[in-house]
Amino acid sequence: MSKTPVLAGRRIAVTRAREQSPELTAKLSALGAEVVELPLIHVTKQIEKDPLSDVMLELGGYDWIVFTSANGVRFFMEEFLRLFDDIRALGLLRFACIGDTTAAAIRAFHLKIECQPKVATAEALADDLVATGSLDSAKVLVIRGNLNRDVIVTKLEEARAIVDCLQVYKTEKTDLSAEPAAADFRARGADAMLFASSSAVQSFVDQAGALKLGKDAKRPLAGSIGPQTSETMKKVGMPIDFTAKTPSLDSLVEALVKKITP
Image (cartoon, rainbow, N blue to C red; front, side, top):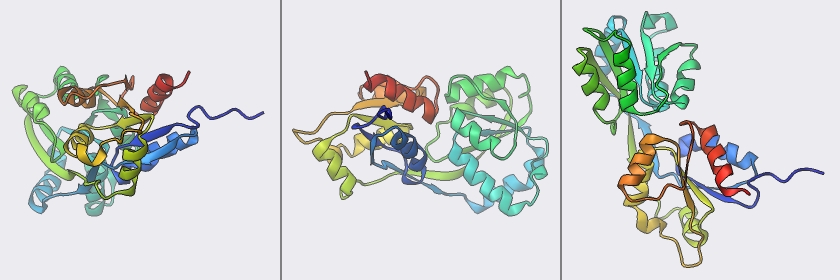
């Protein structure tokens, strides 16, 4: 007799950008969940030509390259491979990153990560880089999006590193007011809602009217992927019902299952 999937009969709202949601949706669907896709943010490549040219011309002179998201890895490597046909053009660059998803994106290019903090926050990454003792007069390239905080840059510069930043993507909130999935969410709610970024949390708050639950809708439990997302949820007064043990999609799904199944 076949076993009933652990999330059978459960409605789970996913708030990732539309282009990033398939992986999480597939994991949830495989467990039997009905997935409600609410793409609260939209991520697009955005790179200014002159800063990109400057970075690529000086690429061999950097000691460290720092990635704060898988989006940064994807868009930077797209440009790198467009300009160079040999991965060895990265030279002796050392790689640092935040989070397991970002790490997986780097390793997909068969590149070694030399600095990844156990806690997936910008502060922890900066502290771990400083702890390597390699930053005095070192040149560091930080790959980022438009919403990144300056904490990494500030801490590295305080450790006497020479830091350049390259923005490669832009994150914007989406307007869900006319989305059929949003209407379905307002009418029926969900068992749980998963947040995988601070920007998705902020977008949820900003367009609360478009997602306001009806009187008969089920109010979802809110799940966070990690420390930075949880910090934003606390700041906006959103309850955190469960949190991933490690900042990864697998861990977030595991925390969800543990929270809502007997």
